[in-house]
Image 1 (spheres, rainbow, N blue to C red):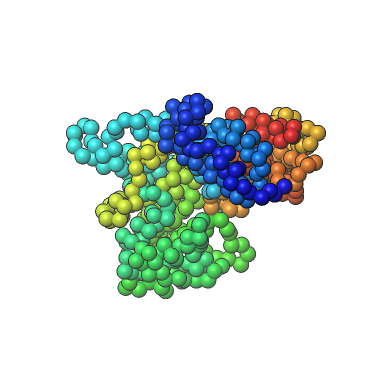
Image 2: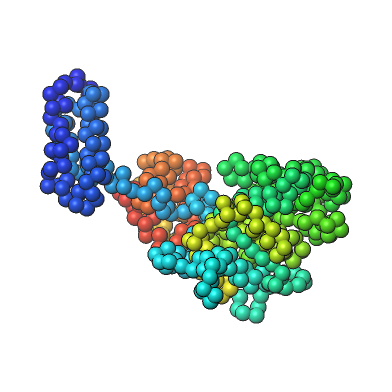
Length: 489
């Protein structure tokens, strides 16, 4: 009920100093510091003044509010000091969920970050020579090992899948790292094609996340875009006819997040490489995701891997660190040493290079590949999980959350890889479908997002769907607790 505000209500509010001198608030000051607590007190008192002005507080409510001011300050302090970036539970079934941070890091990557971040390191110091070194060395050798062969998931040493009859590449490939794949593409184009033309198919002029478009990146690089072919059909002859004295690069772009089907044509990578060799023009491929393992083992075809592209003879391949590789955000350029040296000498490289924490996480991730401990990489472990494994966990969890208000059942469903990788591929899974008698699925999803930690789900056909493929097993209890609490309200 609205009341007419009066000056006597404002006088019932204590001053900031009065609140700060109470024993309850003094204890908070000892824990969190004077400045943070004083700010919280000002916010709480300001809110009460605004409510009095709006006429929503009468004398009795003001007295209650003043009596509980300590609790209000504590809540405000907790809200103000809570980091904005926080962990969430990804129950969407999208393994590489861009909005949720893409690939989660492995335990070994976190450990390596911690030990590198809390001490000095040899980031750019050659310990043997006692002089300045290069930060690239911490991962370049590992990339050389990995780009020579691609072991299958869970395979034993000596049982790597033979993906190509091409030569071993470890002695012919160099790698550098920048802060993301868009930066990798920008840097390569600026180095090789600034002021010249880059030939690319119209069907590959994609838009990636956040409304960033490949043509825009190319323009910023200083290169001139030369489109060939049509949206659905481009032939190698289209590339050849476009070559002129200003041509600096032939570019192949992996189509992220979509596929063109039906009446289509696209030259093979081998054809583009042959054309590049014939006309002495380098060929670059922007893979985007950059797999280092055989996705066919998961029943997914048509997604090229980094070794495949290099064995085909591509001069430079660019890809992400936090997608199919399963590591930290990074843009990685692998290719012929002479081209990588050119790119590394570009002054722009220093502006785009990564720090010691990224190198630490990337090195630990690559070591897991070298040791063939693929299941230690969370994204790979999630993708390789069978539907029956997911169903077993889902059945156990569903049995814990049923109530008079909530109904939970296990149904068949599909997970997706996400992150622009294998856009048409799905992984069979089991879903927990939850419905409420008291609220809609959208309302239930919103309440799960406000739990601690927030739980992010899918909503389909007025049901909340939870896919445990992307939920760590130790998080199942948090989901059960959150849904049980909602069901008991």
